[in-house]
Length: 522
Image (cartoon, rainbow, N blue to C red; front, side):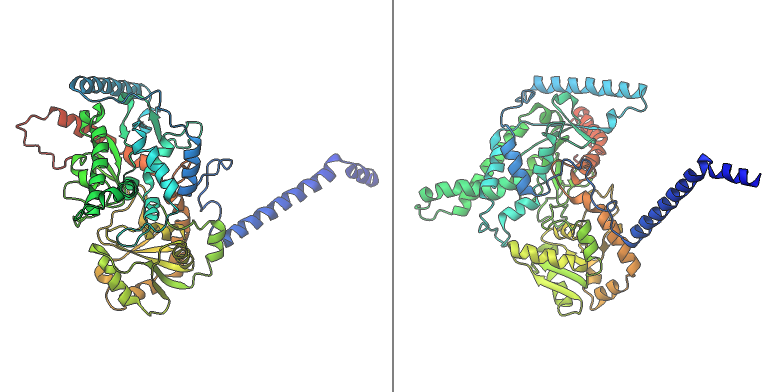
């Protein structure tokens, strides 16, 4: 019996299969443990760094490269859906009635469908402005950007500044792209003005300010220069004014603008010098800004405030430190604190000279005067990637592109700018990725270095992991990516719509004798 039982057990179909099954399970457990152990050894993995939604369509991060593709692939023919028109009393009244009916329809649709996402998607109407305000300006930049000898009065390369403030291009390029190419779900372009929550004005104010007038001036300078006593600076300023007045007239001639006095219109004026001469005429519009300088040097009192306007990040000057870069530099960041840039600045930027004097020669600290061009960019990028902390003091305005250069370099920003307002702060907590120090503390002898040396390695590691996760929020791209700066822009603006509609309706019914208890002019 024993022999028979043994033969039957040996021939059982479960014997060999059970062994194989156990072996497979064991192998799977070993492999799983290996990957768990491996991932625990690395702080930076694919889940912490920018992940693009569709790997088959790689987004372009370079402004110059993206612009080249954009200009050579898009038609400049007028949009067949365009319904812009010159305003008169009848057209304004008609549009207001259509908008009211559309809003009521949306309200009633939402009450019967609690899961409806209608109210969550921002609807934006994009004006079809004449090419001289849009495509012509982009072509002007494209055809002249290699001329690096063109500098501003403080020595900054003009085209570098245009790239830094090119948010108007990134937003517009995404809005007008075919829906099949777009990735964002937070905003949709509409072609009927009555359907719009907001109106986008695609005038490239920074390019106009820095390039257009100067190019026109070059063509006319030889004719006018022979007149004695003529100031070429006055001539350039006159051309700039004419161009801005031309754009201003086109915008303010639209029925939608007249209906709301511009309150629901988005105007990108990201460089603090742009559109400056005519700002008082558009002060009720939503301004897209780099900061809200409170000194009065760039924005007059009553022009900008957080409830109305929106702050967007600068376009980084350096290349993003990807997952490979972050892993390679994790143990090689030997510089405690790094700064490369101009040490002499006006207004709040005077803190730079004081910091330079305080930190000069301190062990573990690199403070360098910046230089323009590719060599300066390379030196800044390499310095940031070798450093634990990167100094981000105020410039002529409270903001500085250096903050965003540090973030995409994996370097913890040390922000010293008392009046700074930050992009998307309603969605992001900057305390997780940056340190904030008051100017009065920072210039005390020895205070800053003692403060940095007191930060525990575990805290530094945690902040760098958070920086890796946050990089995608500051990387403009085409196509625009979910949770990228374009996406966060529309999410922030969606939160302003109810308040904007309130002030539009209120302004339409307030009588002349009203004391206007509302304290803002939005």
